[in-house]
Image (cartoon, rainbow, N blue to C red; front, side):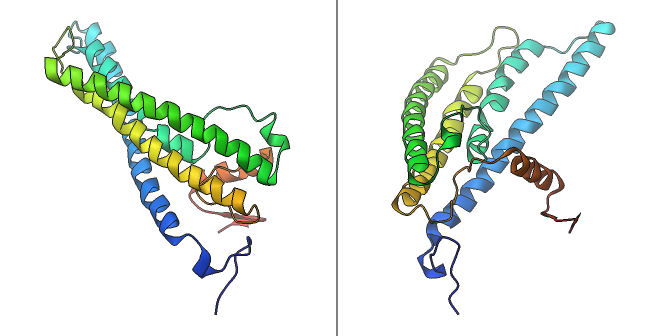
Length: 213
């Protein structure tokens, strides 16, 4: 029996390959986001060790160098995940009053501009990684090589670029038929909906009306 989705498309007409790639990309983004979270935790523990060590006159060697290199991880590793869930700060004064094809056209233009900017950043950050690799650049204190942290940036931005390409396709299919169900694109939510989804995400399950399952 063939079922019909809310957008009026049958199961056979749904973009199966697109949905599967979105799922694969989401798993990679989640892994990068967890990597960023663990790097923050590690730096917090390292800072505690640094404070305690200074009390006993045994500070952590190269604490500043380690912190500087780790900053690239937690600053960039979660950027694609944040784009997927629509967590980046943006102004919705105009977009919040739009709907249908007009909204999707504006969203598409914005995503294309971001993708172009990210592509330039990938090129520039890869150049700096190559330069650090070729000259053997290192930190001043404990001589940590800088190329690993510089490699994180183009890799994380490349993941973001893939997510932006997914969203470009997602908005394009919505422009073609606004009745379709949004897939792999952030949806503008009201305050109540946003709060509900944050609760569901925190507990890891959907909340039913009047209780939870």
